[in-house]
Image 1 (cartoon, rainbow, N blue to C red):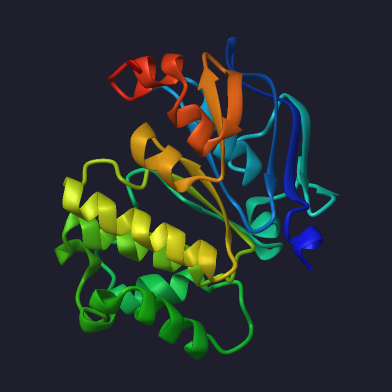
Image 2 (spheres, rainbow, N blue to C red; image 1 turned 45 degrees about the vertical axis):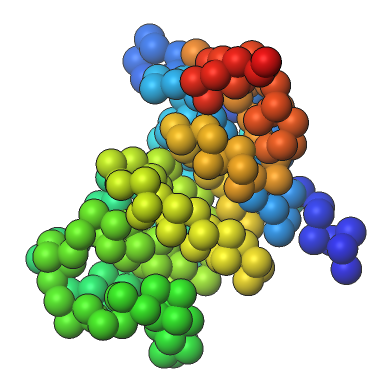
Length: 243
């Protein structure tokens, strides 16, 4: 059982992403083992978001292979990719501000044909505040509540892999801690997570495995703990060098 849990759910090989003449991602390789939390850290413009967008089919890769549970994703539609078990929580949350919390959650399950009531109760248990505000317009929620809604909406498709792009962006430190607590809880409940995050300190504390991206390339990888103790990483991303 444990052997299957640690098999690679996602394998990215030689991935390249270009926008016109700009090479955003330069032949990167990485894996996301099933049941784990994996993070990509790096500065703005490193290619992290482009990597996530290419995996979910929002950007067409210019080269390489993306295997999910052994099946090639390149060239498939976003709808097909989502129906096969991958969802993306986009940077900036992007909830539908004129719709209620419940309507946003139902949209997260729009491709499903079965009953969603069990999953609604699941996400409401994860985010009790959303249950309290289920009939409120999403535009009236705080930034932290909107982030909760964006994550909950992604969970409504029952993903095997949930990708999160900068979930802590623009949130107060106390709210950030709550978001990362939820990320750990979602993982404990069996969802594999690929996390892009500029808050390198929280990301490395949370992740089982971590990759560092610089100018479109992966320059370093290891366990979250290993990279958190690396002097170069501490100096560049954690704001302190090891003494």
